[in-house]
Image 1 (tube, helix red, strand yellow):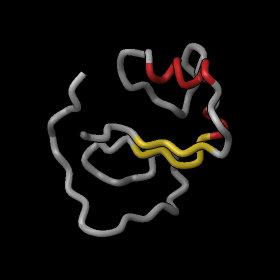
Image 2 (tube, one colour):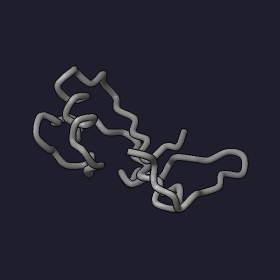
Image 3 (cartoon, one colour):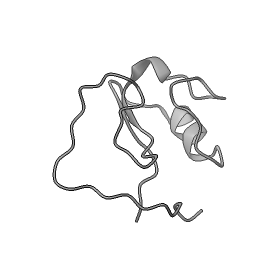
Image 4 (cartoon, helix red, strand yellow):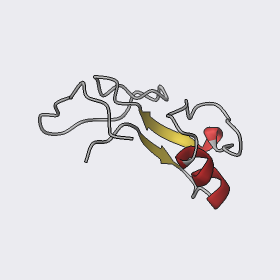
Length: 77
């Protein structure tokens, strides 16, 4: 199993938001609304895992532990 995106919210996502993310067909930027997804203001941490561990949300207070490695392969559809 490979992770493509990791996002943390300060509230639970309702079914319509989860469905909007899951059924989008491709990863979209969670910092903006998209279809039924409207929880961008509740996004606390957002790691798109694009060959680094930068907090895309920009809070800058995330941290990593251990020795993470990256794989250039994309997750299976």
